[in-house]
Each structure stands twice: as C-alpha cells, then as structure tokens.
Length: 454
Length: 69
Image 1 (tube, one colour):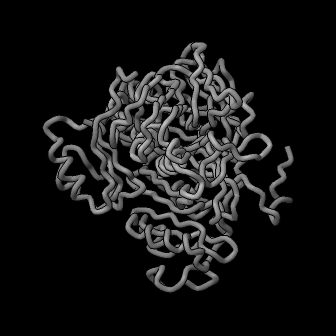
Image 2 (image 1 turned 135 degrees about the vertical axis):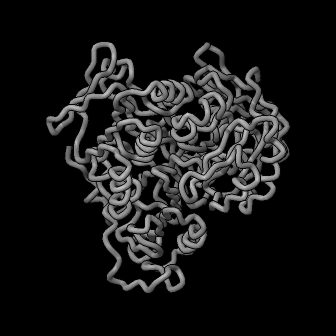
Image 3 (image 1 turned 90 degrees about the vertical axis):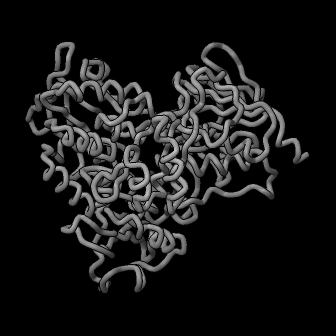
C-alpha cells in the first residue's frame, strides 16, 4: 500500500512560492502520478520580495521576478483560474470555470492578498495602490518613475516601511501614517521600533504616528487624505499597506478549519476539519496555514515569511507521499528579513512572543546590533541589524530554550540582569497593518488579557 | 535565466557581489539586491557566484514557461 502514495493524482491549489516548491519536492520524493497546480493569477510562480525593493527602486521590472525552478515538476499548470471550493467527500477541487479536478491528495497553498482600503469608492481612486502582486508593483513603479509630488503610505509595517524607503531613495517626498506608536513596532517591539522611527526621519520621511487615515480624497484621481488628528496630507499617490488577508473564503463550505487566521493543520501539515479532526489527504503550506509550534508552547502560528513557505511546502510534499511512520514535522524556527533605509534587518524566532529584551551586541547608536528577546526567562527570538552573521548563534539559543538573559558568550559585553527592558510589544489591534506573525493558540495565563473590549 | 537568493540564509559575505557585480549589489552594509532576470552574458558569473556562496543561498534556473498547461 505505501507504494501507492508515489502514484495517483495530486492537486496543488496556489501557484506561488509554496506551490512551486511543493511541486518540485513531490517529484524529488519520487511521486510519479499526475500533478496539477491551480493558480488564480495568470503568471507562472514569481517572487514577491523584490516587488517592494528592486522594482520600486526602478532596478528591475515587475515582470522579471519569475521564480527559478529547482527541477521541472512536470505539472499541469492551470493558471488564471480560481478555485471556488473543495468537496472533501467526492475528493474534487471546484474551479470557477465549472470544471472539477479529482484528487487523491490535495495541497492548499493559496497564501494571502493585500488588505484593501475599507472604502471601495475611495480605494478605486486613480493613484491608490496596494502592493502584493506583479500588477500592483508594476503600476506603482510606473507612478513613482513619473515623479509624483508626494506619496502617502498608510501603515508602517515591513511593506510600508520598504515602500517609504524606496520612495526616499528615488528622491520622492513621502508621508507615512501609522496608527501605532512607531514603525515595525508590531513585529519587533519597542526598542527596535524607536530605531526604525529615527531611520525614517533621518531619511526625510514625514512620519506621523498615533494617527489613522480617516478618508481618501479625490475626484477620480487621488489628491490627499484626512487624518484622525484633523490634519490633511496632500499627495498624488497613496499606497495602502495595511497587511494581508488570508485566502480562505473559497473554503467556507468545505468543512475544513479555515478562518481569518488561516487553515489549521497539525505539525505534519495535515489540515484539520471544522471539528478539529485531522484529515489524511488534505495538506496545507505557506502563508495560509496555521500550525502548532513546540517552541512557542504549541500555540498555533500563522507566518507570512518567505522561508516558511519553502520549508513547509517541502514537509507537506514529503508527508503527501510517505506513510505515517515516515512522515516528518514542520518545526522550523521562524525567520525573516527586510532591507530598508540601507539597513539589513533579520529575525529568528517570534519577537512578539516576549516580555523582555536585551541588546546583546552593538548599539542603537551604531545602527548595528543584535537584540535578544525572552519570555519568562528563556530566549524566544533575536533580531539583528547589519549583523546577519550572528543570527545562527541566537537561533541555536532559541532551539535549545536557552535561559534569558542569554548565557555568557552570547554578547560582546557583560549583560547585567537588570539591563533587560520590557519588550513593549503592543496590542495588534492598535496597528495600521496586521501582524506578520500571529500566535493564535490558547495560553492559559494570558487568556484574561487577551479579551479585547470593542 | 532567473535567479533568486534565499535571504533568510544570506549572511552578507558578499562573494556574489565580488564575482558578479552586474547582478548582485549591496544595499547599505549587508542588504543584498540582485537582478532577478539574469542577462545571458552574466549566467556563467552567476553560476560561479552560486557555487562560491558560503551559505549556498543562490538558486539559478528556468522559470515555469508561460505556456505551461
């Protein structure tokens, strides 16, 4: 029987990074059956990180970021067609063109999309953009090249900050409006967000924090926005960088455990149904998944990280073609990077899963440092700024649940216990953008503080 | 030919910048920017850069062809 897993029909829904890497890995693992990859965008898989960097800087065009294949997965690519549902009993994926694709095993890798501006009329003004797809990036890059008077960026998460950075590098005036107290505060907490705010301002960004945008104005074309502090920003381009929405709506009737936080699965990438029962033939990978992680108290993690899409896709593919005892768990330590204002920011672990931080190497003043995050006396994350080579060391501390503050050898000077300062991770509901990492599990000692009025 | 750098792995050794400066470029001290579509006359240099990368973060290959079905 196990041999049968290398044959049959596999359908992958989602033709981006996770979908492509899973397709390659299935063949690598010896799958010889039929493989179909469904994607709602008309393009073959492409890489998104360059869209907010190289493409906005004018160094590459949006249509040149196609992902290289590691091997040809010999798949039937159904691009430009949206999946509209799954029939778990009949084992069929339903497509918008009316066709049904039968499967023996299914991988869901539908990712996320940009959260749109909530007012559709305002969102449709000419000059208002989101940034997620190739088309988004191409359109925005064209506007930036035309030399607008001012760009308004709504939201100072990673995408918003990278856009602001690219605008300044092109010599464009830019205003950033952030609901929280500082850029990146939702991802990195208080200490590094202060550095981020300094970097914005030193590079000439008109950074407004603690404000929301209440309305976008314009008559056909965007001309400016109203802010909650009563001020108005005149601009001719607006980028809405409010975070991402998981693409789960198509599964509403499926009976799978799919919700706004993603599709719940076990550590082996097997999807749960709505009763919390694990499925045997439906797998999940990438941004759309949420999975339990032992390093973070088995809370369900939702990650929007490039590396997670790759690693989880490989685990899912392995488990799709191997019997139970040979299956392996997805236990990778989360990690991500960002380049903005000339700084290379990299992270391992979950910085928001912290109560205190210490600066273990370097300093904020030097713009070169390693910040270690701890939760209840153990190391849970580290972020480096222009110190990428140190990161592997901290990753090891996280994997081994090392004590916090970190042991001797983890820093370039003595760390007194009282140097640990609160990590100042804010309530996500106070941010313009959504969190790029969300812990969505049950943590008994925090349950009372998690209740949000209104 | 397309290239992608796994920037989760990249530690800023900049060997690629040295070997294929028309494709790889440092942005600040250690941020890496690169040309995603590799010009034909740079493919060999990118191969060398990929081989020389201490953390093996560079992948070079064809993309899924547009007419794939």
